[in-house]
Length: 98
Image 1 (cartoon, rainbow, N blue to C red):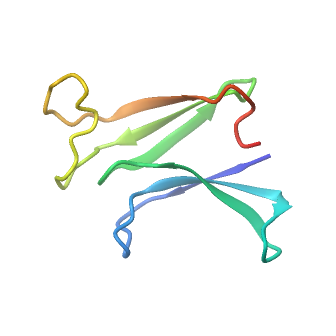
Image 2 (cartoon, one colour):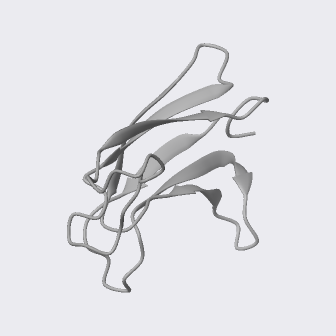
């Protein structure tokens, strides 16, 4: 079982926003709940809107306003220069968060 945590806002250390998976049933080396990074967003975006399929093998999440402050051209895979918010699908193949 994972609890999904979204880190949002301007990070003082300049890190990108990200989504973490916390598992309160597993302990880390310090005896606290295990927390793992699941995804890191592109420059100046927010990682939002997580939902999984009923079998927990696919997760949908959104990247909002990528590169809003400049420095990012994602998703520029089609040659267009317009930055676009997008929904990303992670098809993990096994139960996500395990």
